[in-house]
Structure formats: C-alpha cells, structure tokens
Image 1 (cartoon, rainbow, N blue to C red):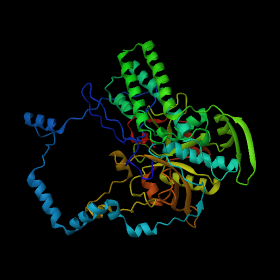
Image 2: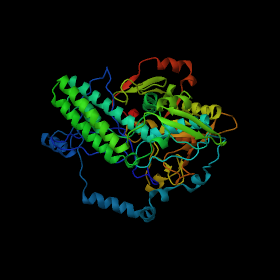
Image 3: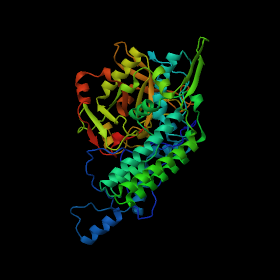
Length: 518
C-alpha cells in the first residue's frame, strides 16, 4: 500500500452472497490488493446446501400473482411522494443542511472527527519495543507476511547485533502463492471426485476467493518452516510484488481454467492429475516471471551496530531462519475472539478449506475472551520484550493520517442523526466486521496496578509518511471491539486451554467470518 491506502478494505467480506450467473457470464475479480485465498479440503467436510438469491421484484410478482401475502413480506417501491417527504424532513432540520455543507466540502471524517477525543489520545507508553523504521507493503495485501516478518526481524536484529534489518517479503509471497496454487488445485480436484456440483455454494466460494494476497499467522509459519527466509537484499521487491493486481488476475484465470477442466474430466483421475501437473508448472512460470527466481542459498556477511564485521559464508534460507530467528515462533498458537454464543470460549475453531501448504499445520484458533488476549500481549511486551502479531478489523474509527484508533474517535451518528449501536457479535453475524489487516503490537501503556492496559502502540506496514512515522496508537476499548486474533507462545496457556488444543476443532464453513484473511 502506497502512501495513502488505495482501497477501503483488502480481504474477503465476512459473508459472501453468490449470484448465479448464466453460463458464459464472468465473475468480477477482486480489487487490487484483495487478500482472498483458497481453502484446503477437509476429510470430514459437511454437506453444504445450495444457496440462491431471489430477485425481490420477481418474488413480489410471484406473491402478487398468488394473491397470498400472509407468509411473505410485500416489497414496497419508492415513490416520488415518499422521497418528497424525506426531503421535507431533511430540510426541516437545520443541522442537516449544516452537515451537508460541511461534508460535501471537507469529507465525513474531517467533519465527524471528535476533537476532544483526538487531542487526549496520547502517544506515550510505559513499555515500548523499538523495531526501527516501519515497512511498506505498497499496493498489495501482504500485511500478514509483513507483520509476521516484522516480529521475526526483531529477533534476527537482536541476534545479529543490527540496528536495521528487513526480511524479503517477496521471497515469502513467492512460495506462499506457489504452495497455495497446489493446495487449491488438489482441494478442488478432491471436491470434483467426491461429486460436489460445480455450482454449489462451496465451489463458487472457493473460486471467488482464490489467489488473493491475504493469510494468517499459521500460514506464514508454514512457509517459513518449509522455505526459511532471506534478507531483503537477496530477493528484493519487484513491480509485481509491490502491486500484485495483474499477477493475481493471471493466476486466478489460470486456476479457474484448471477447475473448469477438472470438472470436464468427469471423474477421470488420470486426466485430472495431468491438469494439476500442467497448471502447477504454469503457476511456477508466472510467479517467476513476475517476482524473480528465489535464491537457494546466499553468502551472508554483515557489520553489526558496534562496527564489528561478521561472515557466515554460504547459507540456505532454511538455515538462516533457524539460526537467527530462534524465538520459537513456529510453536505459537492463535487466539481468537469469536463473539458468537454458539462458539463457546475455551474451544478450538477451524475453517474448512483454509490453508496454504499441503502437509503444513492446519489453520486453527483457540476461542478465548478478549481480556485473556490482552493479558497475553501485555505480558509478552513487558516480560519478553518482543513484538506481538495480531489481526483486526482496521477500518472502523481509524484516523489514518494521524495514526489513531478509538471507539469514539468519530461522531458519525451525530452528523447523520442516526444511531449505530451494533455490538461485536452483531457486527460479525451481519457482515459488518471481520479481521482484514494484520499488524504487530510494539508497546503498551499499563496503569500503576501493573495489569490494566490504557492504550497500545502498533507497528503498521503502510510506510512512514503517516501516523507517528508509521506507528499507530490504539485506545484500549478499541481492542475489545475490533481485534480478533493474536499469536502467542503456547506456554502461556493455562491447563484448560492446553487441553482444548488437544480436542477436535469445531469446523466452520469456508465462508464463515472467522475465516477472513488479513
């Protein structure tokens, strides 16, 4: 994402509605930077009923023809008299015209910004982890890779004695996308061989979501454990890594074409295997053309912040990762706050068809209260002194320019004379909120009691031209409302949560909002 974030959201929506197009019609591609991704098949996949949307006009006409309005709501068209009434009511309230004059000239955020709240949201913290200059994901949805590598680079800098250091995000994305192509092809092939209809909600969801940029902590660890990591100098950014739209469009078309051929094979496993082999090779070719050929090894030498020269010699990316990122990040667990009552706290949640590396760790979460998540993050920052990866719905109540989040930072309701009062559970249920961005906590202000948290310092990946040189401030209540996931050491969990990790996960469908990708 360049200096100003070019699109409002960059992950799949919390709820996907599929409109069934006639044969030959095309589905619109996601906007540049979309973070949607395919999901791996699961052995115990539940049967998914077909979903259809009736056109309101057609439904209303059918009811009218039946003459039976007792069981179905009648759709009422807008009329000129209704609109005239709305206009009259609008004009009767002087504050509406004042708001209109202000918003059409200045924009809603500048008008609704709560001056008193903004000036009292301080940027001082009792605990701060210095991770240096922020990174910049540009016009891509790679926040989950940037933020996880920002955690990793802190560990590497400490071990290398460096003040500045950055891992290659391009290297991680290359292998994530290659692995994800393989995962998607085998997932869809398994569905085809199992007799899943091509127009089922499941298949259409997976086709719609394929080959975005987004992911999860576990997916990032799957890549690093298998392929390691390299310093950025050895595999730098390219035009396509910084702006992934055209590359992703080509890969989506390639994969959707392959799925078309897989269904046309009508259960012929040998024929399907040939389609998968040819498509994997083509995906590798496209990725290499766009991103370059990643190194298998490199010659590593550096001068530390004290001026002392070091030489490791030739080293592989896997060796580099295991030698210099030794904080046990691969053994972290993901905690989520799923506020829906039917998903009890202290249970493990999984998402069907969500993953990236065949044979890698499944993407699973432990559902816990937000207060427990906060306590873990506070303890890591204060006791271990390293950044903490997290995922949130970053857009509500965000002052991007000044780098601030607070639940009362904007008074939209007062400007619109409208009440916005859904709670977190209601927002998740009705597609108004889901995780869409990953960042890292690098500071916290703790009250004198040693446990109460007041606000948080956040390392973003949107460059240094905004906020406090790219660092944001989060008010504590905003954490409760809009943070959904944190990655923490497994050793921090109490016995009952450790036992929950050993039990089977509650598997949610591919379109569930808890499967949203950062």
